[in-house]
Amino acid sequence: MPRRIIIVTAVHAPSARFLAEAYKSLCEQELPPGWSWHWLIQEDGRTDEVRPYVPDDERVTFRQGRAGGPGVARTMALSAADGPYVKILDADDQLAPGALARDLAALEADASLGWATSRVLDLLPDGSTAGFPGDPEAGVIERGAVLDFWKANDFRAQVHPATLCVRRELLLALGGWMALPASEDTGLLLALNAVSRGWFSPEVGLLYRKWEGQATGQAAHVDSGERAARMGVVEARARALAELGWGYSGHG
Image 1 (tube, rainbow, N blue to C red):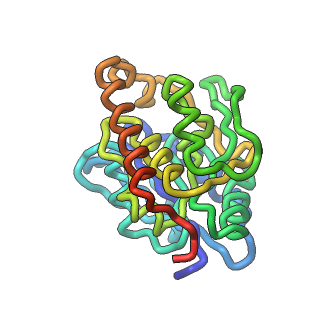
Image 2: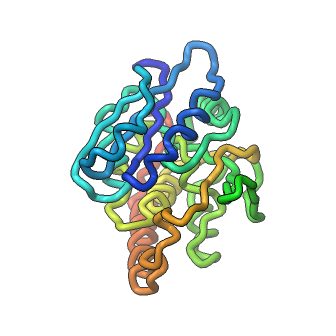
Image 3: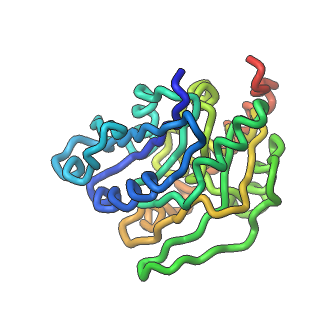
């Protein structure tokens, strides 16, 4: 398999205008010698509104499909993933300098790690950034640690699922992203933590854009009934995986 890190981005019409900034942040990444990236942009739906914003670059693959939400779009994009690692990059976010190199360094150095995450800064509408407390200590995150923290802190994880870099075979083994209307990436994070150790980099790896159109800012996202159901199934899946006893060791 090529020494390639796969960047997976789900996009819909409202967020397409941010692709240029995401692309710029990707082009500014410096990878170790012999490594390259392949950006898979998957539209959640079939419109004529996204393609004009897709960069003209042979390293970029653009596809469309039936609308089903960002988790479905990302999972469909995996059909073209041709490298050992998959990095999430939402269409409206930006990678911080050095993010990909740090992910690769952690995962290449320790085969027992299934995934890596990093510190996040909110990117505010005026262009300023804001951090927030609560990051874990730098280094290894043991199995079950994310679930324990998430459960004790009103379903908020101490690491951000939008920063995930995952071993491709592990991501496929877990079925990609959860089939939920939201929190599908949190579901993946907790499932990963249930079966494998992870890594946290204290250096900023992502600028997480705050804007009026983002899904997490909509009223439906915080509907109490739906939120309880989402969190319930996310937790149940993670606990079931842990109780089944299967784990990723990195040794086949």
